[in-house]
Length: 242
Image 1 (cartoon, rainbow, N blue to C red):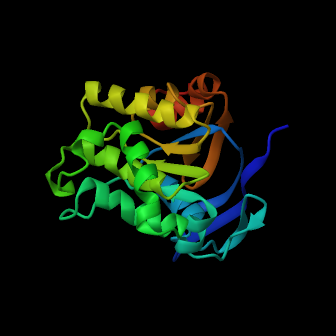
Image 2: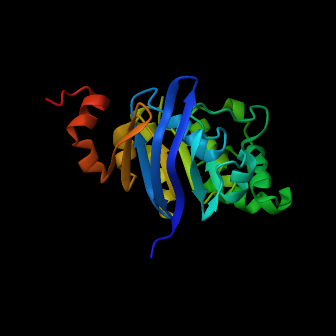
Image 3: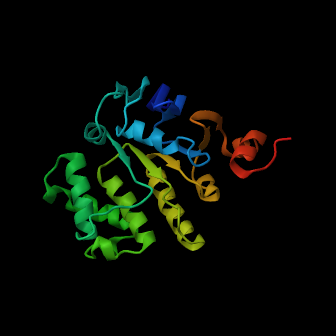
């Protein structure tokens, strides 16, 4: 029997008169990988901010691992097991790659830094950054910074990992390398929600796909079926539904 990890129920968020999230409902089981696509401005990143605690909904509720977290701040949700990456990586540039992970690991777990050394080394190995452990984060390539963004999120020991357009700006070869890393993270049992414009990367990982348009859920389900929805093709790929 699958256990529900995340429940979003009729969540609304507006900025002034502009509805950014308009009644989104979503249920996610432990171990699933969900992809989210939609046009720019559709409300995807706002939904992430609502789940991670950076924003509070105007209406609706968010439950995580059986508890209502709707009003809980970011740091509490991180401690509960919600980790996220950001579309534009912002590492601590003057710190080493390893030190960047230590910050996340000590904060997320509440353990002493010395107790986080081995887990951080293991995460560096999983994300292909072990050889860069002592490099300053500011000297990394874009692909390496994307990997570090994932690694920092993983260092908080998340039950749910939110990935925000981590493939953006990469070459095709770099994108494939990153996809392999995400596949490995998913295979280890981590539950993932991935927002991405690079659709072929997304479809090679996710079990389920959701499409958002103007803050509303347009479709959700099997990725191939969703991508064949004429309405999805029209709003996302510019293919006429007629």
